Length: 179
Length: 399
Image (tube, rainbow over all chains, first blue to last red; front, side, top):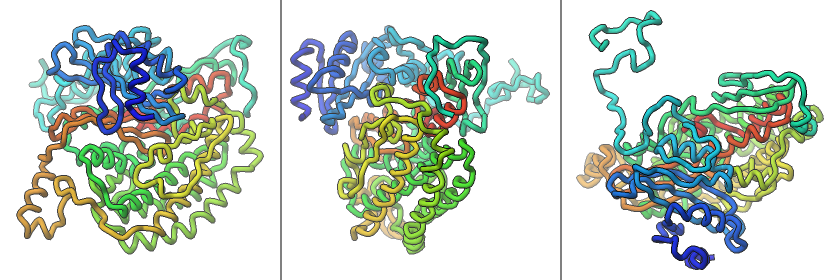
């Protein structure tokens, strides 16, 4: 099936949900409303023609300069029978970061959504266990957001407290840096 | 010893908690599983991941494209060349660069060598977990030879940083040709010994047959790819479905299993090693004439002679080294068949000098979450061989 045929097929059911579509580097990309995500994913998974029963990947994105749609979710599905690949994108405002979880359809989404929550702070409604996964639990920010720059490796204000050494374990450090 | 999984409801008696990992010798990496056990049976397990998280996706957003290659080394470090070359191909796809046929074939040789090395580690370690240490030591000699081959190509062994965007930094050296020929002549005999040792070995088979089977439907739902998915009977291989690097030129088969148990996962990898040898022979014996890199001066470092004598080359050299090459806008997904599954790169460029977003589809991270479901109701000894047979690599899991 060509991308156009796939798109036409999806359109028969979700004409009003599709905001934009494109095919960068030959992969069909559909941008939809976040409310339409769950029904559409269910459709492409169970549909007789598409049979996209494999979720390749999902990840978050942050576009600080797209006002009102700063955060994005990117999903990639694969129909192995006919080798159909579909990419679905949703955008949401950064002050209301939530979207439906697709763990009910793909168990693989569990950790990937946790990872996205960890990195971007997107909350997945209906996720069974939405906790941080790669970063430590008491971290109080979402590090992949664009406002957080990488640490400057040559900074000079590092002290032992940054490494969990607070002096109680016999490690000496310069008293000037204690605030 | 493998037996039928027990119905969880029938479990009675006292439960105990066991920490399997994070640094237990049987886990081969930093994985923690907190098991709730009833005797030898596993009732429930809870995983902890992220011990060696290094924020590669964040770092990648602050690096020029050629400096991201060393980050990919550290994902699946048992087969770094596949990661490196997959990343180069992703960038080439983005900038619209076609590489000469010779580069494709050279890449295939390197990637299949890496696949052999990766599978050798996985399979010999399964044997070690069942008590057969001998095969491991002998096969590591063969793996060592593969590492020497890497060394001839790029100078490094484990974290290879092999190749460049657009091709290779140099052609295969005479020593490489000599060593590869020797390897191709000797490896099959040595590997056959290992096959004879384990494949029909009664003790080994008793330990791994029926150990934590996982059927095709559940495997697909959990996003399994690579040997673990093929062991369940789904013949999905990126090399065949979306051929890259001229894989369509080679004649090879995709081994599949039936039940998806540890023995199937093991056998699929064993057979894949033979297929990889076949592919290397085909690629190496038909190595096309031509250049070993594409003509992309914006990304491929010019030869030193030109840098000293040619102003344009000097400018390109400077710009590449300083990371001042602009990349076209676009978003691209490229995947390769890594050592343990579909290794994907989702790259979004906003037209700058570094990726706007780079996401690695790491097969380990996706399928390792099925582990608690796989080992539920099984014995502890089955859980250990299952963990080995999944080939979870800590670097890829935690990125």
